[in-house]
Length: 200
Image (cartoon, rainbow, N blue to C red; front, side, top):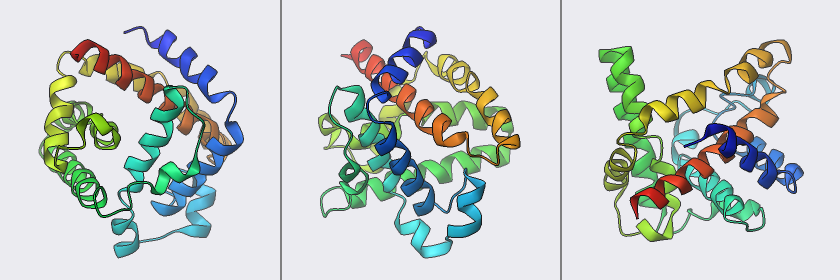
């Protein structure tokens, strides 16, 4: 997969929706405790049960970017679209287990942890995908491992290509991440679509 092509496609798809995309990113950061954006973290920091219960918003955020990648309108409603009786449980379990698995691997050894992080990277995209709505949360993680087989290094290199933005965020008090976070997420949505094509 050509990461330059994926990133260019992501920028093109985002170009029409930047205001909505930035609002969506801020909403997700608030819901997850402002873990990336320092200025949000200081004002809207949330902990414990609230953040835990809002874990499925990660799946909604993946749906938001996936739909943009598919040529649909940017819709903030995608963020909460999984908060229903059918999708909430599997989304919650899927994201929670993914985090637990990654943390456990990281505790053992850093390198295997990074490999597993890459293996599980498509979990939220799979959970939001109607094609895989029959999968449980844990099965979505297994599916991610399957489709990422042979693509983990591509994923790591792709993510590392955004490292410069994170370095720049240090001197901009994370403000630049309002651009970089959705840019990277959109690129990952494009990456997921290409993975699906290869696996069909």
